[in-house]
Structures are given as structure tokens and as C-alpha cells.
Image (cartoon, rainbow, N blue to C red; front, top):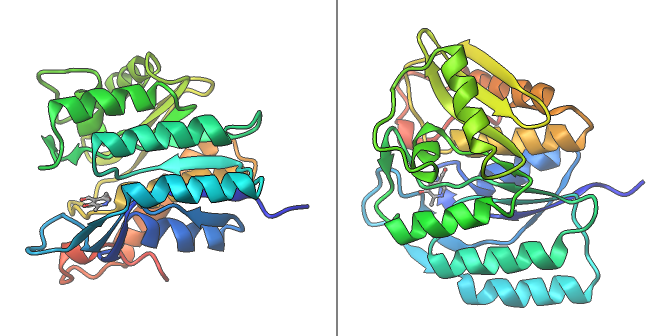
Length: 264
Ligand code: PXL
């Protein structure tokens, strides 16, 4: 049997535990080969560091795709995350068209913001393009802020009950056949809600600390778990549990910008 393979289209941020520096080790530890297609190389993620470097790799991406196609490579999953520009979204759409086989799962994490705010690089045009990319996915993984942007919500509750979380996930299936909304605050709990083939709400105790990269941790474990043969709700529970444990492993006095201690 061949080792399952995932094409991971994210940035590589050298410091701060997010995107590829999370996806590669986690998928590898789960028995899945992660083939990185970097969108950019940054010295750190953009969540709170001053003066980070940013090397755009858009022009390189199509060349990598051409070479992979010439080798006849196929993937069990294509997993996209942080993207730097509208043009880059087009490159990802093209990649999906070329590499989607009958058994490929296309997972789009529409990374655009958090805690009620869009990231500084995100324009209305970018949101429209990201919505189109989501419509080409089998599964989308927005957090609550990104769900609001995708669904054009003007106002959004900070706190949900289970029915409200489920309803939000249901609404997201107007974009893709399966959807999971993450980082949903539900009173003393935080969790995720899924809709599509599987409908569920998962809750974990809410630890009042916020870190960059936890969405990437969630996505990597979810995909690894799906490839291992779990149904969506079980994979989502594994992912939420892993994020929760990693946060618990992270000392209180650590700078939150450094990310969570998922290595142990
Ligand atoms: O974890 C999301 C993410 C990925 N990549 C970069 C980021 C962020 C969040 O801030 O800045 C470069």
C-alpha cells in the first residue's frame, strides 16, 4: 500500500508555529506524506511581529505544479490555507483542476481573519475570490470571523448556543458540500460545528488564551484523521482535542505569538 499523500498549499513562516511548519510535522506523524507547495516565505507569521520579511512565491507555484504533473503525481487531499493575493487564489484553482482525481478531497481553509477582524492584507475583492475558491472545495474550514466574511454578515454574535453553531455550519454548505466552522465560542466551551454528510457540534472547555496557528493545527489533524479513515465528526473531535491539549501544554508565561507547544 502506498503512503497517502497531501499537497499542502500554505505559506512557510520560519518562526511562530503555523501553516507549513505545523502541517508538515503533524501529517508526517500521522503517517501521511505532506508535499509542501509554499505560497510565500516569511520570517514569522503576521500575527503581532514587527518587520517580518515576505517573499512571494506565486510565480514559482505554477512551475512546481507543471513538474508534479509531468511526474504523474496524484494526491489523496489538496489542502490550501493562507494565500497572499487574488492572483495566488487563481493559481490554487488551477492546481485543483489539474490534480483533482476521483478520490481527491479538496480542503480549503479560507484564512482571512480572526477575533472578528479581517487581516490587514484582506480586501473586499480578496474575500470575493476566496468565496469562489471555497465553491470549488469538497470541505471548507472557516473560523467564525471567516464564516461571517464569506456569508456577507454585517453583524455576528460573539457567543453561540449549539443550535446557532449548527445553523451557521448548515449555512456554509451553500458554498461547499461539507463545512466545519471552527473557534465557535459557546459559553464555558469552545468548539466547532460541521454540516454536510455529517452534522455535529463538538465542545471543549474554553481556555481563555488565543494563539495564531491553532486553525492550522486543527486542519492538519482533521485531514490526517480523515485519511486514516475516520468519519468527519470523529476527525473533527480528534482535531479539536489535539488543539486543546497543545494549548494546555503551553506555559502561561509564554508569548502567545510563539504559538502552541504541539511538539510534546
Ligand atoms: O495561521 C494562519 C496564518 C498563516 N500564515 C500567516 C499568518 C497567519 C495568521 O496570522 O500570518 C503568514
